[in-house]
Image 1 (cartoon, rainbow, N blue to C red):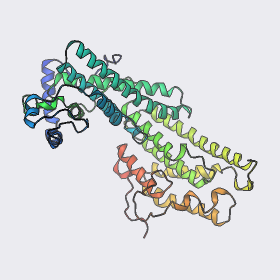
Image 2 (image 1 turned 180 degrees about the vertical axis):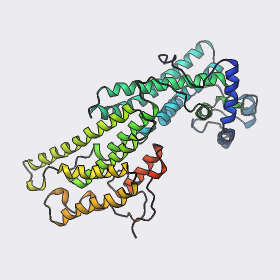
Image 3 (image 1 turned 90 degrees about the vertical axis):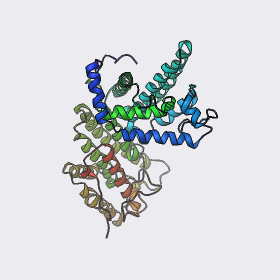
Image 4 (image 1 turned 30 degrees about the vertical axis):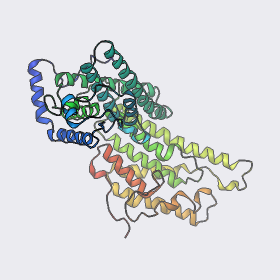
Length: 440
């Protein structure tokens, strides 16, 4: 983790005058009440478990200690590495649902690395210190590789399959660089403010060996004081770029990537592609995303749209000509014009920032067109009453998340997902759809 040590960190200074300025900056921006609240929470968790003290996150007994012994002698210096690895995997791991939150996971891993490194340098010497540092590098290294691969092999693969070459390598370099720079940032900050938790010389000094507490405070303090201090080369993705790419992939995967059914109607596919296009429109307007990523997202969307139509058409043809198919007239290629019509009109409403019309006008119109074909007695499998549209408005009188249908083609699910996307991407609140009761 040495390649990027020469890159500048804004606001981090080392001469005496600037360090004093930074100290004043820290004190003016920092929410001490929040630090005290976190501190009290950890202390209460410890007290509730006396005499067998163990950290709320370690889930492991240390030894029988009284409150007075803890405050007087501190926690044992032993580091339970198995539990460290468990927490790195659990809290630092990247699940599909949190793929867009990659920066948060990078921050967690980097701060934990620096917290344990500082602890090892305080508590160990000689060969023992070398052994502890090796364990730290091994465990956090494995945790970072899992995080890196989880993102690259999903988001990066999605981009490359949709005409963006060498994307996995670019994402890998960007994530690695960001992780290295976060470590450098945290290490430099600890060097300037070793007592950033404000516990030295107090009865709470025993918390210095509670690495989860120290890590929480470190992330809080640095985020408040140096919110814009990571500079990466222009040829790499920014943290906001990585979050946006992850969010776009997540949405494509949720409804479209694994969708293979021949019962998908033109109206449904058009709405689903249009919904993904709505998110593309939002991302394309975000000022904190690079122009390069925006252009790539647009190219990915165009490629993926054509792929989805071709893929389902291929399955229609396979079903139609399957030797044991009795009703060949149930299958036919999709009408691309209908699909693109609904996809385009949904995007155009977002361009006009008319989010209500999407949910209250466009979706009902698409459903009505589907119903007309059903009522006309279409023989096609995709225009039978037993279809995904059949339950699209079920229980939709109020906007509420339909239990058991997190990925279903459903009106409420789409609204909930949209609002979460707007919030996570820090989009203007006017883009949130909130009407309360929909049907009178």
